[in-house]
Length: 356
Image 1 (spheres, rainbow, N blue to C red):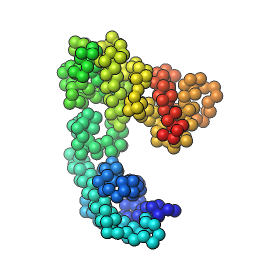
Image 2: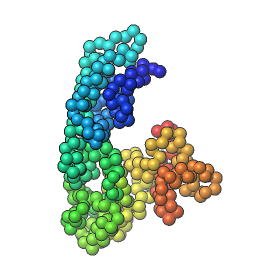
Image 3: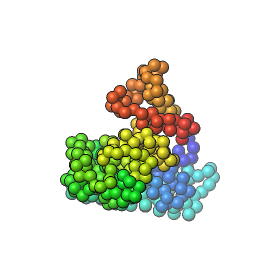
Image 4: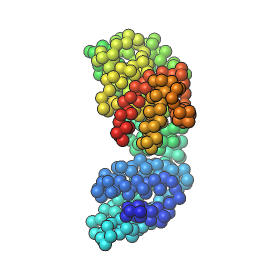
């Protein structure tokens, strides 16, 4: 066990929240962030900010009071100071600067987690997140509430799937100026972006009604790109891809004469026009089930999936395809459009082979 591991183990064994998995993740992440930031408190706190928001929300559900958080972090501060010699090379004593930075860091962590706890208590009393928090989470500008919402993934995962609709100019002279018709933006249940060029609506019947309305109420020269159904957690990625597809339509790089254009129909053109940023968005969008796997397993399953997409069942291990079907669900249904998945894998596998 190296010095930092010993320090982290002592911290986890000693803090009052040691049995809490969110607190454990924060303790490990906080130590790593502090080391990576070379002791710069503000940088390290920004790195673990989502974990602080998760911890506060989690303990709000458990009924933890701010006073209890204060006591817990006071103990953490003492343990962090007492254990500092473990984190330094043998025979080295922590100087005043190091001790001061650790004190400031723990105080900042306590402040962030306690603020999240207080906000979560207030939200619970008011009935949960409102539509404004959802709008800011997707379209910005971000607020404390919307950042909480994004950081606490299970809050988003409990919401119904959504689809995004983005206006495209249809003609180059309208690029950057296309907006969605007001009659669409004001439909009950719609969450609209501040530029009036994009909105989110619940997937299913609500989205179908809005798309039918778009076909009837087309603004002159305006087309609409419709994103695929997605979770709220993945909605920002879907929005970014739909915006990029709308840019291709507006700039004349892709031609489609329909009023409403499904994003899936533009996916191939989008892949061919992919820059580095767009490539990352495509990988997150199409291959999200693989991204949390260990690198070796991710590469193995990604290779298997591409082989299956290109050649069919022959030569593919049954156990690996079973695992892939569990990960991707009906996205691997033979009736689904599998080409975007195959094209994205061809973009991702060389990076994964190189360990990225």
